[in-house]
Amino acid sequence: MKVEESAPKRSNPVASTIRLFEAFLLLAAIAYGFVWLASRTGGFRSLAEERLSAAVGMPVKIGNSYARWNLDLVFENVRTVDNGRANQPGIRVRRLELDWTFAKSLKAAHWMPTRISMEDGSITFATTVTGQWEPSALAPMSEQVASWLGVKLKTHVRPDVEAAPSAAPARPSVETGSARQLACGISAHNFEVQWWADGDAALAAMRGLNVDATPMLTPGRSITHYLVKLDEVKGANNFEMNDATLELLDVGDQQVVLAFHSQRAAPLDLTP
Image 1: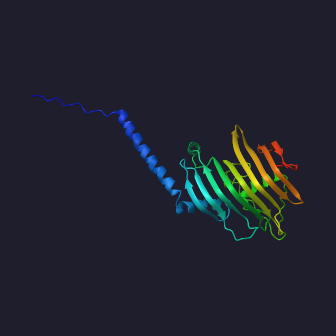
Image 2: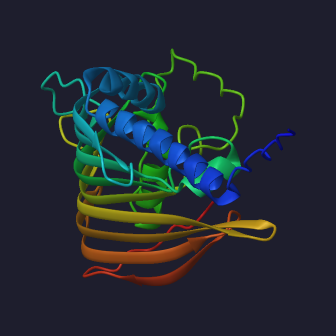
Image 3: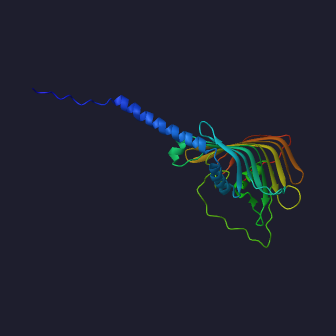
């Protein structure tokens, strides 16, 4: 008697696809949970402190850190070491947030935030013996904003000290880019900025400063939109301005003022 062999069962392609999709979801959930939990650990903060210290050029400490549901990173109580001197260069930020767009990061083949947002902070600049502003990484944008508002920042180099040679140009980035070469958007809200040179009083000071810088990519040209608002600015020679608003486009070789008004008009220096 001949027994017929049963044909092998074919796997259901739909069921296989569902199982594969479920496996990917499980791995994604594990990775998501790992990143979410890791962002709250001291080890993660230590790593972030190293990166921020390298970016600012000064030792930086972070009080707290965590990730939002969309994995945007939030750092609280970010500050440089404080020795109690009013003219000590440094930065203090109550809240710093890195917003991500993962599709753009994957396309660029490196993790780059789409916007860096800072709230409630202060930045103190002081001159070194070579006449350079410190923290040096933040000086280009601060000098540019001060220039737009008519504040003159003069530094003095000691005659017995030669200025350090300029470093080789690097690829524009958040860490090394100038105010006109932003790799991502930058927002700073409710800041106080002071510049100290020689003497017992600040050379210039800004209070209630809000800056929103948004880079816009166009064919063959990089454009940055700036919106600057501040409550008060004081400078040398009794310079004072209140409730100022400045909006402009920086196209690299020139700046186009879209709007400017304040309680006291001041000449704008838009020299590149």
